[in-house]
Structures are given as structure tokens and as C-alpha cells.
Length: 91
Image 1: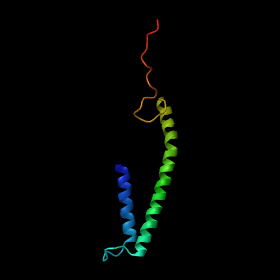
Image 2: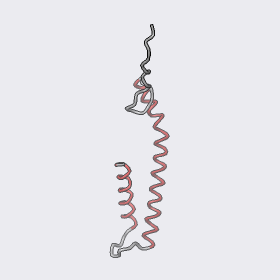
Image 3: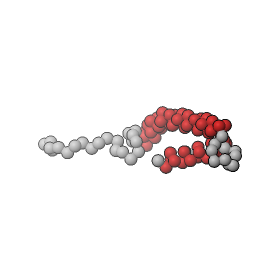
Image 4: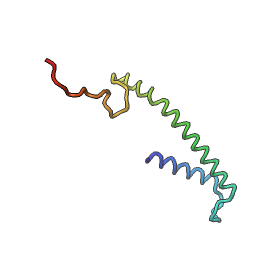
């Protein structure tokens, strides 16, 4: 949530600085509004492309890291495989 809010705030700041040039009016002009719409759309598309690339690369990075450390691949913090369920002891 924190990362999302940071990205959202940065996007808002960038688009506002780029598009809004006159603070004398309460409402946005048509030009400012269309500039803000296209600026936000560009940044959202770029963010989606970056996240798509990241999601595609994470499994390979986890596998490589696991191979380097000799551990099975998987999300960090989770056990590689569940412990066997306790059952009757074999004789």
C-alpha cells in the first residue's frame, strides 16, 4: 500500500507540474484537464508495463538465487516444502 501511494503521489505531482500553469481559477481549463488525463494515462501504462516485466522476471531471479544458495526456489520467508504430517511411527 505504501509503494502504491508513493507512486500515486509522484504521478500526481509530475502531471500537476507539467499541466497546470495557471492557479488563478478554481476549476481546470479544458486544456489542463486533457493534459492531465493524457499524462496520467501515460504514466499508468508505463507502470503496468514495468510491473508486467517485473512479474515475468521474479520467478527466474528466485530460481537463480536458490541455485546459488543451494536451496529450493520459492517466495522468501516460506518453507521450501511442508513438513510431513506426524503419523504412527514405523517399526
